[in-house]
Every structure is written in C-alpha cells, then in structure tokens.
Length: 519
Image 1 (cartoon, helix red, strand yellow):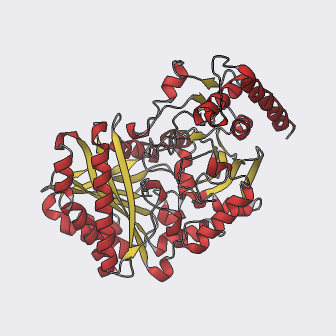
Image 2: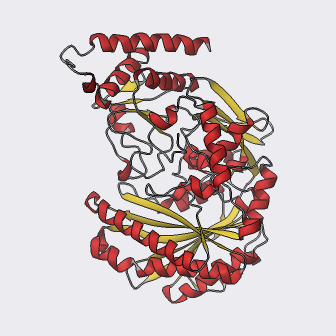
Image 3: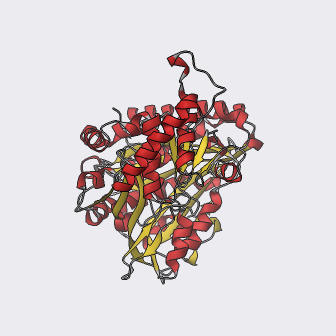
C-alpha cells in the first residue's frame, strides 16, 4: 500500500508538471480546449516521467511492434502511447495515472477480441500485458499460475512436461485473459464446465490501485463476478488454474462433403441430445465455399490415450469423410492444429447467438433454422464482397448440455455469472457466425451483412419458439448485448458488485473497451 501511495504522489507531481508546461508551445485559452487529446498527452507524459523504460511513443520500436500484435487488422488503432507494465504494482500505477489525469485507456491481454476499441484505443494509453508472464505449476501439479501475457498454445506447451493440461482456449493463438473472463469454452467442457469454473484464484488490481486476491474464500463476490463479467471490476494480473492429467488425447477434424450436410446437422443434434460421455467435446461447423457449395467439419476431441472410436462420435463417423485428421496427439499439438484456422493480416468479425431445445427434434430444428437462414443470406454477402477477398465464412454450434452444467457445478459450487439454465430451458445451442476478409474497404459491407443475417436468424428462431437471449461474450459482436442474456438477476448482481469494487466507475468511464455492465 505504501508503494501505491508513493506512486500516487509521484504521479500527482508528474501530472502537475505536465500541466505546468511540458508543452510550452501549446496554449489553452478555454477550458473546453482541454479535451481527450490533451488529457491523453498529459497521461502519457506523467506515466513516462514515472516509468521511463515502460512507456513508448509512435516511432519507438516497442510501440510499433506492440501496436501490430493483434489477432486481426480490425483491431488496429493509434494510441497516444503504449505502457508495458512488468507486474501488478505497475498496473496499479497505470490505473492511478489515468484517474489523476482523466486519461482514457485500453488494456490488451492476448489480443483475441476482434472488435475495434475493445483492446486498443485512439489517442489514449494502451496498457499491454505482454510482460506479465508468470507461468508456474504447483509442487503437486494440481494447479498452475498463469500471467495474462500468454496465449494458450504456450501454456499447453509448458504443461506438457508435467503431463497435465488446463481448461483453456481451443486455438493456440487465443489469449488467456479474454477467454477466462468471458466464461471460456474449452475441450474439457463436459468434464469440468466453463474454463472460468476452473480458475481457483485471481490476482486483481482494482480502480483504487489496490492489489487483491479473489477466490472461493476471499472476496467471494468478486470471484463470482470475474467468471463471465469481463473487465468491469479490475485488471487481472494472475490466474491460478486447476490442472487435469493429460499425456495424449484422440482428436482431429472430421470433414464431410456438401451432399451430406443434412446428415451432418443431424449428427450435431444427436450428440447434443444424447451424449453422456464427459470425455468428449465437439466443435461442428459448416463452411461455405460459395453460395452453392459447403462442407461440414467437426473438431472432435476425446480425452483418452487408447480409445479411437468413441461411441458418442458414431453419428459423425457414419458419414463418409472427405478429410480426417483424427489421431493421438498432445493438447498443445492439437491447439496448434486447430489454430491453423487463424490467418494473419486479415479482418474478421464474430457474431454470437443461441437456441434452446429439450429434445432431439427441437435441437435439430434450431440447428437447421440457423444454418438455413445463414446459407440463404450468402448471395447478398457475395454481392457486396468479392469471393476472392473472403478468407473464411462459417457458422458453428456449441452444445451446452446438462452434462456440461453438472460438470460446471462440481468444479465451481459457487457458480458463475453466465446465468445459463439448462434444467428449465433445455440444452443451450450457442451458435457463432464468422467472416474473415482481406481488404479493409469491405468492413462496412461485412458488418451490415452480419447484422442483417443475425437478425434474420433470431427472428426465425423466435418464430419457432427456440430463441434464447444468451450471446457468448467470447464470440459476440460490437452491436450485440451480452449481459441481458445472463438474466436480470445475474446482470443486477454484476452491476452491484461492479459498483462495490469500482465506486468511481473508472472501468466504465475511462476504460471504454469491452462489454460494459453500466453505471
């Protein structure tokens, strides 16, 4: 606490010095002249004075490298400066600096959220967590501490030597903090629930600058809120995760031709309605190559070193494959394989939605409607964006079943913020649209298309009585709402907890990025 007070005093002096004349060539005649750009200048100048080796401006090699280190070109912006803290105390100083100077800031962890302004900023301070790289397995190998500077591929590779894995991202390039704070879909969903259910402790920097722990026994309300509540409460500087024994798994992509799409959709519904095997996980998707042709591809995961034909996957295996990469491999190697879906130097947008179903017929109907509407809208996309500019167009489905929710309750008896109720509503089928394209000039056209397509899917599933308001944060678009889909009780509880830990509303006013819980 003494260190924070010292930082506060120094930052106050730095801000005062900046106001007194760091830029004598600039003269402000009216109070209105002190706008966001002036504040960001002051914020960067004050931060540079206190942390000269950790603040970088345009033209600096570190600035240029960090400002390009994003998942998608869609995210690229122009911060006034970049602050690269080395520990939680530095993060605290960065927050206090923004409070003192009223400088808006953004926080970038793994840079996976492909929404402009969610993990970068124009003119303000971009705080990058690249150097928060704690990675240490416990002596009993039952947990691991992970810093927010990592991507999941590096975490899995580190854990290989201990024959353990964690519930994390399914693609190696996905970042650690964004996935965990959104709830997190992992290969271990049917065994252990959401990835967030397997976070045992958070180290969090609050808006006051205090560094606190949140766990099942300490700051328990904050512990609950961070499991799906995103960046509305503080900046997480360390996660302690539960590990699972893992040497090799049976996994790969099973791809079928366009003539078998109907059978493929039926296989998805069959698995979603009847699977009782917790060792299994699927990510089925339909990938159109043009308005007339598609393939169906299911990422299949089975947590076994010996089983090569799990019964739960038989509905997929019954369809002739045109490609099949199923084999024994480590989780790290499989995450790299699946990560091949990520293409550098492109633009992309993800959109989330959900249907619910209490039996096979209802689940199949929801899958069929979302698929058919998506496919029916493709001609308007291809009319707006040249086919050769499109890198990937797809729709996928993630079943959140009673098996998954039972695993969630076992792993995390205190619950999470997501508000999913499969017991009363039935299995939740979370679907996601993905569009990736090369040229930035088509951004408006793509955004218009995904908004209209999403509305069409939602209208159709509402008409069928299968719609659910849940939008999974990890795949939601900027135009979508997330917290209302958690349910009124969960959303209110999140707001109350946010007000408790951030009474000055720093993470609502000064941190504009992310899905916000409100004032």
